[in-house]
Image (tube, rainbow, N blue to C red; front, side, top):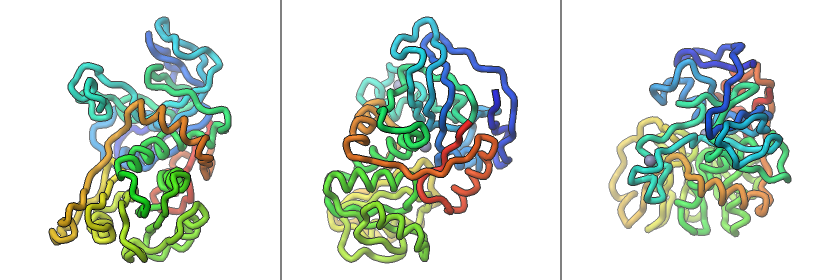
Length: 327
Ligand SMILES: [Zn+2]
Ligand SMILES: [Zn+2]
């Protein structure tokens, strides 16, 4: 099968011809129809997330068709369409797994990081971490739901239910979260790189009532802020824009260093927190909610062979919506 392979950090992916993977006992073999490109893939390729499996097939926003099953796999039938997210496996017995926080499992394994992912024609996945995809979505359209959507949704949930919601970094996750938040009746204030008028227009088209530079203060204090851009200085910026008792949630897996800031912007019971990974419950909730909320995804498709171009466009911030690879 054709695949795009990371052989060393900070190197471009290379096209490779690999043997077709075989499904293990509780795994399904999946013919990949679409795999979205996540900011996390860039952090892996750029060496900001250390110790990936090498060589590695990246990609953890996979939509495909089950073509074969392991002997103990019985959740899906051959021919079913499934989605595969970042969470690829958990131990099931650690305190986190037993306490409803499998996203923090001590021995979690992640798709496209410790497990080969979806930048390929075929992939295998543990069926217990796969999800059915609503038929209202096409394959390409559904792919960004599997991480930008799922982890974006977890980030939104952690922000509480304040009505005035700031979103810093208006990429793939933000464009989905904004639609969910609008559906919940919240008001959206979008913050982009200074001067990025195109991204600000994109945010307004998705229901933001205000869009401006990340260095600016919003017209009203925020009840909560979500940070999706991997830029540490956004943390004090978001705290300064958030009201007393409000919450700032960092939704990414990696961020540049956060500069020192005066205690007074955290004081008055503002809360600063991060979100890590996802639980299967997040996935079930979000994948049921998205079609009901009318969430649509904006995508730019690339043939699998152009994976490096997709990563490059994501790095440069040129994309509006999500990049999706199609084998
Ligand atoms: Zn565990
Ligand atoms: Zn991701």
